[in-house]
Amino acid sequence: MGKKKKSKKKSKASKADRYALYLHSVQAPSYDVKFFRRVYKSYFDEKPKILREDFCGTAAVCCHWVKGRPDCFGYGVDLDPEPLFWGEEHNLKALKAADRARVHFIQGDVRTAVTPKADVVAAQNFSYCTFKTRDALREYFRAALSQLADRGVLVLDLFGGYESIEDNREDVVEYDEFDYVWEQAKFDPITHDSEFHIHFRFADGSELQRAFSYHWRLWTIPEVRELLLEAGFDRADVYWEGTDEDGDGDGVFRRQEQGESDPAWNAYVIGIKGPAKG
Ligand SMILES: C[S@@+](CC[C@H](N)C(=O)[O-])C[C@H]1O[C@@H](n2cnc3c(N)ncnc32)[C@H](O)[C@@H]1O
Image 1 (cartoon, rainbow, N blue to C red):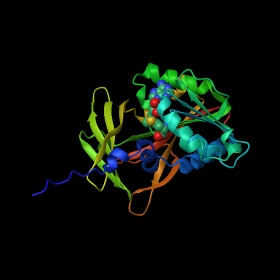
Image 2: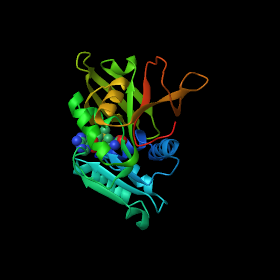
Image 3: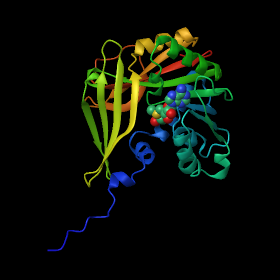
Image 4: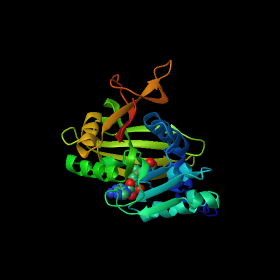
């Protein structure tokens, strides 16, 4: 009896590109950019031109920001050279040369990196939750304020609800080529320290485990608003998601002063600098 030959075929997980999977499953740059433009225009009645994307990772959002818009500029700031390099190779190179020239990547700390004064500073996918004390978060908000033009907005996203603080919970979203898995590993009710992981699973049974891990303080909306005002922002507004006829989120965020209890919500908190309307 002949020996069974070992398959030399590599698993899908071993060939996977975690940044490409993340972009496909987590990010929606065209949605983000539309939202930022709508929010800025609603306060200042004009089009924003300069975006600073803090914690930019692969800078997908600032690359999208400049696409086909000769008067728009994007500045992406991240500490880690690896996603920045990926972003240069994929997101930046995908742009036309004229657009590409208006995007700048800065490897640095969002608290100290200096860029031209921006109309919009965006800190997406909860990245600012890396700052775990009021002093540290206020310090970041002060830095963001100093990098905004006289009229500008800081756009922060946030999530919450009782489902988001369950330990050992997995939420799976199926895509054609892979499953995206959001794992809530741990939540500490005393400190709000939280641990989350992203895994990618493939049809051949392989898995890219802990492709990304996050250790955050899960802040609440009132805390974030209060800290924005303490840092010197003129206003801090909340954009809450509407619901469709089944009661699910409809992807449309509107300014609200009161929300409804929800087991798993996403929202935006906007810090406003300057004389805004409304
Ligand atoms: C959750 S990822 C966000 C990626 C992207 N912004 C998004 O929306 O999906 C967090 C990123 O923040 C970066 N980061 C963490 N602390 C930072 C700091 N103090 N200054 C700059 N970047 C930081 C990490 O290197 C990482 O790329």
